[in-house]
Structure formats: structure tokens, C-alpha cells
Image (cartoon, rainbow over all chains, first blue to last red; front, side, top):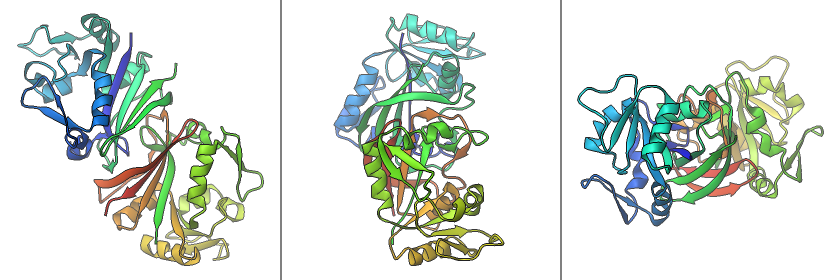
Length: 196
Length: 196
């Protein structure tokens, strides 16, 4: 089993600026190239540079399922029915939302990160499990379950906001790499392995 | 005039971990190579990889003077008489220490970052001014006086501590680059230009 996480992050370590700002900087690279990358949502097509496209494709093509937190699920309103990466998604939450039940695209797990990852491994057919949010990734790191960290490092200082990793009980955590360093347009794609 | 700042920083944006920890990770690259780099202190010689040495040399060879904060000056006890990079150093402080006066190696400035940088420019013979500490660098950024940011990005998550930049009034600050990306041993040297 391979468990990865990733995020677009400012040079000062934030995945969103103060008061949920800064996304025009953090996600600029999703739209500043000339290669179309369709998503599961027909109204949302990314336009990446070739370098970013190839890097992103390497991640998504091995992805079997995602684990996300309830906050992200709610914020996106369940992505309107399925995650744009079109993989089954496990929502880790203490209180599963009413009106939803497990279906082809979503499963709800209430008993912790280990169980959520196991579920994602199962419904993802044994392919890579992606963790989408730093809180979820931090829990996995603390449980010794995270294998790789993919950082899309954006040349901006946000000065505050939400750090990618937070509440890490196991810090300091040593990583190996970068195994890859790919330059896109206003982004440096870095891939690290968690030292075990 | 060119004004630069730099620091060894963890992947999650900290220049020291919780309770002043993590330095064995942040500064590992100063000692994990096989090229000697002497400092002004005969008891302290760095041992860098060739890649890190060349990168570091590019920075120090154009350096004329430094601006540091009082905290760092006190923490190092005035580096025992001169900064290890052997350049004149301007200490920006509200209260100059007693028992010191301006000499060949140190000058004390009390009237703000602009004045401190002007002083460093003057005593450094017009060569690059280096700002040593994120607080000082943040003040310079806010005053529109910072030109480059050199980050030595270390593959470790410290989970908390002192962020490099703090109290940035001018955030978000866009940078250009990296103009350089050099891989050392357990460090990636990145150089950015501040967008103006």
C-alpha cells in the first residue's frame, strides 16, 4: 500500500492565506499553461504547462482512492456528487452527513485515520491512496502511515493562514528527497518520501 | 543597491522548531559534505558538498555587509567580536548594548530598517547587503527594500516554531523564480527575486 499527500503551498508554508485568501496565487499554475487537463466536472478544465501536466498525471494515474476530511467535503458540497479526480473518496468524520450514504463515489468512516486508509485501499483496488488535507495527512504521519509528500511550492509569501501540516505529534519528521523537482509556471513540484 | 535575505528553512516554513529545536536538521547541510569552508572563527569550519559550497560562495562573495537584529546579536554574544562571514555588521536595535561602540566590525542603528540598510550599504562599500533574520527581512519587505530571498529548503517537518517571515504587513508578496534550484545533501537551495 502506498499513501501520498500533496498540496499547493506558499513558500512560507501555507495552503491558504489569512481568512481563506491567496488561492489566486496558490492555484495559478492550474490555469497558466496550454495543455488541457479535463476533470470529472465538465465545467472545470485545468490548463497546465507540459511540465506540470506530466507531473500531475504521474500522480493521478496511479491514484486509486482519496481520503478527505469533513471540512473539505462540506466546503465543496461533496463536489456536486463526485470528486473531480473521479476516484472513490472516503470522508473521515465523527458525524456522517445526513442524506448521504455510501455509494460508488463516497464512503464515510468514523473510526479513525487507520480505518479510513484501509477503506480507501480496499475501494481503490489496492492502488495509491491520496490524502487530501493537511489535517488528515498529519494524522496519517503520526500513525506512521504516510509514504510520500508532494508539494507544489508557489513563489508567494502569504504571511499567515492555514499551515499544510498542523498538530504534528511526531515532529520532527525527516523526509527523503526531493525525489523529483519539476519546474512549472509559478510552481515548483517537489516530491518527498517519508523516512521510516 | 541589492538587498538579500536567506535562511535554512524546514519544508513547513520554520527556521527553528518548537523551543529552539531542530537545528541538527536545519543545519545538517553545513557539515555533511567534503569541501572545507573556513569561517572567520578558526574553531568553526563548515564541510559542504561541492554544490552547496558553490551556491554559498556565490552569496558570500558578493556580500558587503549584514544587518542583524539585537536578538541574534545577543544570542551569539556578538559572535565573539566579528561575524563569521567576516563582513561589517549593522545591528538594528532600540537599545544599543552598553560596552560596545561602533568599530570595524559592528555598527548600531536605532532609527529603523531603512537607516540600517543605508548604513550597511555605506560600510559595505556598495556591495550586497544581507539581512540576517526573518524579522529584519519582513521589515525590509514591508518597506519595499528587499530584492532577493535565498531559501535553503530542508526536507524535515518541524511542526511548529519560528516561521521565517512573520508579521508581514505587505502580504501577499509575490516572488519570481526560483532563479536557481541547486540540490545539496539534505537541502535544496532556492533563490527568488521579489516582484516589484
